[in-house]
Image 1 (cartoon, one colour):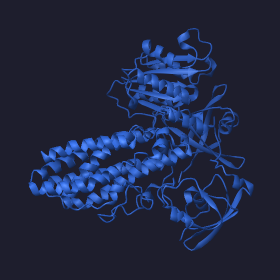
Image 2 (cartoon, one colour):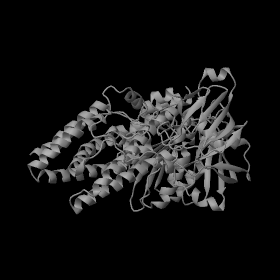
Image 3 (cartoon, one colour):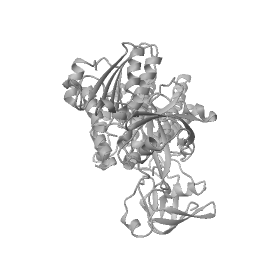
Image 4 (cartoon, helix red, strand yellow):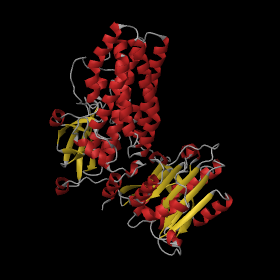
Length: 251
Length: 357
């Protein structure tokens, strides 16, 4: 068995890697892709949310929004550091894409990437005001928690550990969003209607961020130990979690 | 870019018949860069027959020992390890990157943690670094080491481990498993699942452990991890480090390509950047166009070096090339001749790549 084949066999059986030197080239590429997708999503998410700090209605909401922006950038940096160990040029990386750029509100890009920018599809769409931002944060926040829980088991141990440490903070962001959304919903019928419109807008877009049910890439990522549960299982989990959350709004 | 620092060899100790322990000293100005964490490794580079070889070896010193020391076991067909065992001398200079690796947990001196360590052969090197460090810096910590070797005379750090056992009386427990020579069945043979089950039942308290470190060949690591989980240790408390010699030194990554082999092995690459043309001779395999450009002193743009971010995009305006991976370029861009130079290898004997388009 060649060296790479031995390591791929080891990974397929649940083995973990801790050093870039041991990563076969294809594994390395897929791992970098997972990391780039996370980093780009965090940077783009933070950039989009930063504008909303000013629109936050109260000082508590401003603090929460600012904290979310700060921590998302910090999460990106933690994963970028791991990319750096694989030879990525960290200083340059963060200036590669215009993170705050957005497409039109009603353009449809499905789940595709754009121009080498690896952010998840959902971070290409613009936020429209405070209620919309909070709603998106709740829906995507729940998705992030599920997606990170999945990646926190990945076979590259330094990354798995980074995600384990990031996870509680991302969970807190989702909670902050939920607290904000409940406060908004309590303010009247008009607010509830606005929330429902935002949910209708964001729900299919966040759902698309889970990827297709029959993704051929998933099979490979699973062999590499980078993924464990298929996209549709995670999507189902998210959908139930969102239903449960939204029932509190309608109550 | 990876930066290498010179380290001078101040001592070489023969540890077993086929392993040496090498003590290294960084230059005064680099000393802070070589403050390592227990369990980390150094990556060395050296040219053999004109080809650069990079190999990583774990540091076997404790964090507070004040020395930088690696254990190098000779592996079959391993150029670097054979050279280090047979030819390296005190006074020589080695080139190494800063210590790297995440095979550790942060120290918590106030806690009384119980650690488990599993080492196969030279997999002991990072583990002994961890043992020395935690016993010293966590005064209430205890450590159980299960250490597998072919035979008694192949045991690396045998005396040092005995000394540690005496120094930290009652806090370090060592179980040697020998493939041959052991009198008691439990302590002979390979570390199979059955053997793990027997050990964990009577000798090792797995469920009460705070963290387990495993370093050795792949099958051993998988077996032990499975057994640990079955005996109640959660997966996130198991730390893996793949055996250093699992990947015997090879020079550069090869890309299999028949076409490239058919003509010459090198390509004359002309790289255009900021309006300036530079022509370099580069191999068709083992080096990307980006690496060739950087090696030629050009300030070529790159960020991820994994075919993901598209920072290193350029257009091939003459000649043929192929990409190892491409997550960034659309099909229509590829059709127009755009490539990610970090993933791009020439196929033809001549190629012209333009970063300005």
